[in-house]
Image (cartoon, rainbow, N blue to C red; front, side, top):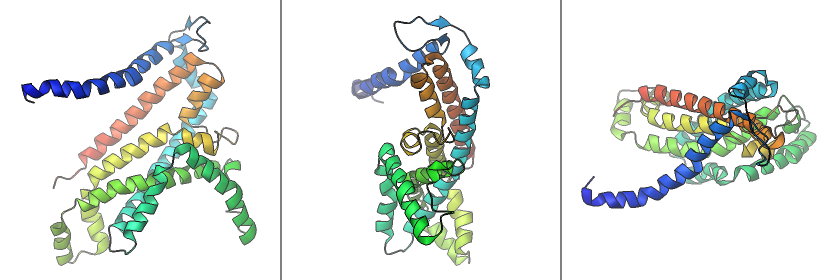
Length: 290
């Protein structure tokens, strides 16, 4: 960095640093402070210092533990489905299909829809469209309102999340596939490698940087999901789809346990950070340099 440009760098980065500090860092520190108190969030009411009691109470909160397990199951299913669908779509639209550009646009479009709107759209589909299809075709064992069934509501969440995120992940995989040198693929063809062998031995190893980014984005998004959870199921039926973020929100604003809710939020932050950083570390080690 040239000395003459230092002022310009500071001029353009200072507003971002100030905004990030104001919106993220300071509220996070304040949240850590409140997690050591018993408080209902009303400024006029006193705060009672309880130390680590809020964190210890987490292990006795059956609803929080249930939401933790639900979030883990949802995240595992969502990460697998999103990346499989996204990678499959990327392979198809980078082939010689005549409708590749149209397919790419159609698959990516759901990502542009806001989470709340997306949830309400699919709530209508599950409630009316699925029910109608089941009645007309007689396949009511499959086509019914999944959102009202405790065994299927979570799968409905996974389905909608996959429909939303697959297009975005597809774009990342497309960039990775297009970055693979053609001479490597051509050499493999000359050597007699089949399409599956080229995909397994060449495409997948060289796509590891794309895998790193896609897994990180889907992991963090699945763990933090709230808007779709709110509009699609509202945590129901019988809290069968109440995720991490919704449980924390309900604890703070629904039950007025501000300190306890902040303790949950702090644990939530460190859990997500630990898992995503571990994933990045593992996948980074498997990346292949070209």
